[in-house]
Length: 147
Image (cartoon, rainbow, N blue to C red; front, top):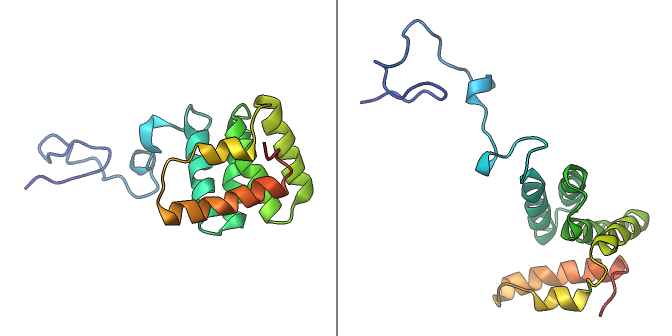
């Protein structure tokens, strides 16, 4: 049976027997985000945004704020990340941050409205729709135009 060593060839006969196995935390053992994204790399902002959105759905607003701020920090040119940050901020009673995020989002997408966002839902599943209501509420509290 072949031995699996992260960062080394799978077969023990191909691995130098004198070289130590990488330990957790070593450079060759660290996990990388899917798609080859790395800090500051293309796509990492989307992963932070998706995790932040999931956190809003699950009611973990502190974590959502952290992740959405990170997403916007990495790539400030994505309007939806700003709108989700506005929603999470408003739901967390952070009116000033919600206003700032809303303004940044509307600067990038001046035609964005809560109604337009409602019409772009990707599922009719009751659980999904119920979770999205929380985001609609946050967007409205943040002052995003209803449309």
